[in-house]
Amino acid sequence: MTNRYIYIPDLVADMAECDANYIRLRQLFPGMDSEDDIEFGIRTRTEEGATVVINIKERCPFTTMVAVTVSSENEKPIIKWPSLELRIYHDVNSAEVVRFERHRNFRFRYPTPNEHMFQPDEKSQINKYLGELLTYCIEHGYSLEPLEFS
Image 1 (spheres, rainbow, N blue to C red):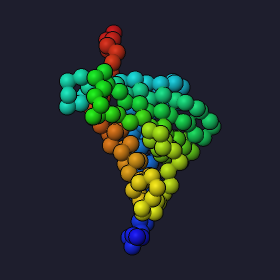
Image 2 (image 1 turned 90 degrees about the vertical axis):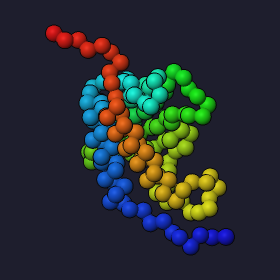
Image 3 (image 1 turned 180 degrees about the vertical axis):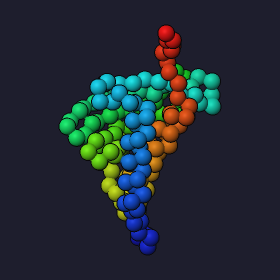
Image 4 (image 1 turned 90 degrees about the horizontal axis):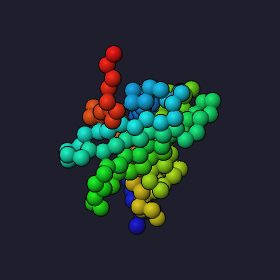
């Protein structure tokens, strides 16, 4: 059985999301050009919260590979924070997800049904998820190090 609905990607909206993710990353990690990683906490609805680590994996003249991991001390089997790998394009000020958990190299559109049960707009959804995660970090993030006042 084939699906009559064919998903048509909204390239403008997808690029806008990736550009906004670049801005959000720069807000969270302003020292990205010189530092290798940053670690901070985020408040969640539960008391323990979670820790976010943004780690530079590879630097090239125009791109940077970044890993984003979120973890909490009380990892519950029901709730699992994903790990993401991003490619940041400095020449166009854009950032996209290239790995989500164990999945890599997402297509811009998937036929339905497909072998791996991906949604037709899987790549778009993952980049929107990154945007939501980064926005949440900006709004609810806090330093794990005590602040020093001089």
